Every structure is written in C-alpha cells, then in structure tokens.
Image 1: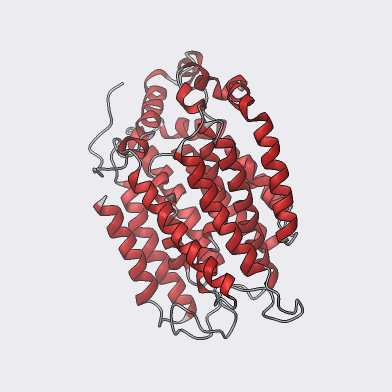
Image 2: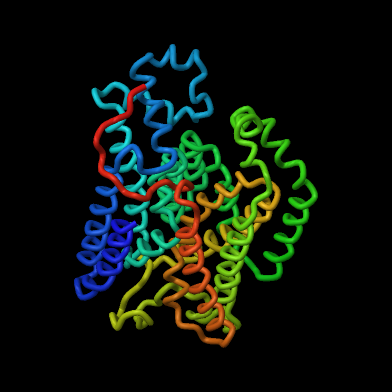
Length: 402
C-alpha cells in the first residue's frame, strides 16, 4: 500500500504548496500535479493489480484470439454491457490488447473525474483528497466497468450544474449505463436536484422507502437472480446474494452522518433572505477555516444555483446511500450501488469542513462527519486483501496466456 499512501500524501502537499498562486494558476497546478501521478500509477499497473483486472484482460485476449463472433457464440463473459464490449473489441485490434485495455481504461477512469472536479471547484486538490479517502481511487484499480461508468457520471454532474439540462444529463447517464448498468440509479437524483431538501420531508420519505425495502427484502435475492445479467449470482456466486454483515452498518452510518451534516448546515435557522442563510463552501470574501487565503470561493462559478445544485445532489445521494445500505441487509451484492453515489458527496465534503459552524449542533456534525470519513477509510484498510486485490502493487510485465 506504500505507493497509494505516497500518492495521498502528495495530494495533501498539493493542496498546501500552491495556495499562494493566482486563482487559475493554482487550479491548473493542483490538477496537473494530481492527475499525472494518479493516472501513471493506474496505467503502469500489472494484470495482477485489481481483483477484476485479470478477468477483463482474459476477455480482451480471448476476443483477440478467437475473434468476436466466436467469442460471442461461446457466451464468454456474456454479462458485459455493450459499451464495455465495444471497448474490448477496439482494444483487441492492437498487438498488445491487454496493455492497451489497462492504459485506455485508466485514462478514462482517472482523467474524467479529475477534470470534472477541476472544472467545478476552485480548490480541486481538496476534493482529490476526499476522492481518495472515500476509497474511489482504490476501486478504480479493480472495478474497471463500473468505474468507467462513474467517470462518466462525474461529467454528467459537471454538465448538469453548468446547463441544468436534464435531457443531456440523462443521455450521459445512459452512456454510463452502457458500461455498468448500476449507473441508472443516479437518474432520480438529477430529476429532484432543483428541489431543496427539507429535514422533515427527507426523513419521512426515507422511512417510507426503508419500510418498503424491509417488506420486499426477503425477495430481493430471488428477484436479482431472475435478471438475466445477474443470473450467475444464483448459480456460482450465491454468497453475493446473502445478507451483508458489516457493510450495511458501514454504509448506513457513513451516509447517515453525512446526510445529517448536510441537512444541518444546509438548513440554517437564519433569515432565509440573508446572503449567509444557505451556506456556500467558502463564501466570496470569507476566510477559509483551513487556510488564511482570503477571497477564496470554493466553487468556481458565482452562480449560486450551481452551488445549490451540488449541495442538493450530495444530500439526495446520502439519502439514497442509506437506502442502499438497508437493501444490503438482505442482499450483499447491492453494496456496489454505493460507488455511483459517492461522486456527489465527494464534491461537497470539503464544503462541510470549510463552512464555519455557527451552532453547537453544527460543530457536533462537523466532528461526526470527520470521524465518519476517517472510519470509512480505515474500514477499507481492514477488508481482506483479496477483496480489492490492489496490494501489493506491481508494474506491468506482460499479459497471461489464454
């Protein structure tokens, strides 16, 4: 894990050393000095880094060896979404398809989220640190299909906050679903993003949906096993259809604490007509609680609607995260839906910590959110090594034989 911790330390350093640079220069320096090492680590990794990496490499090698028609007729890896199959077919045209697949997928998975963060925020390095601590970087080294979808979701967030065009955003989510079907879960978030979440309404709606999940929970394994794409879980992956153990508690607590934090800070009891009634990450002209860099606006645009949209999206994603955790109580495989929700929260995590708390409750929520983030990261470090399969890190030395 040494190389990953060195990357994390480097991200922290980048968030500090470039503070005195002018705005655009600072953003660009943080972006370039973060994206280059993060992408290179992913690009240069071996087939052995990432539990699922070898599976995808075998698939592209088989297409290269057999040709797509014969590959398809044998039903090999038939659960792959069409977008990912197209990527495999394109990579199979090269002399070293396994190498090309790792390079191309790594560039997509790293560059798109890092660029979206750069475009949306004034201090991208802080969000890159949050991206790392929510374990999204670790996941990107193994869950290739899903993380390509998540990378496109980051672009969908960027497009939506800039244009508020639900149709273009939905189209981008559909493209993401062409690589991993679970991306569809984020469509409702964009639909309701313009509605400011209220504490009482959010709690009532969540309780209703949680009750519905509890009612149908015992049937979830059967329902998932009936879906052709996931039928394999019912035959050779039955453990994935069993109730989760620690994961439901981790997800419910993590998203629950951040939901409470976002609602607490986002629903102040000040005059709603006052400028400070709805918190920005760092209000224009305000002083950061992390640095003394004045006149620092966390979000790049002055348009308050963009700030509100990002805040609303993060709040609703946390509510969905709790419901996902509830469903994992009955079917373990559904925990993976969490990763599609993390981008929304990641973009505003520094917001929560850099907005000065004004009440005792907000101070408590700040502390709890910090604790939740640290414990979420520590929980990842404690999972069995084979789960992610990214440790030890080794450099690419060739593809396996098929």
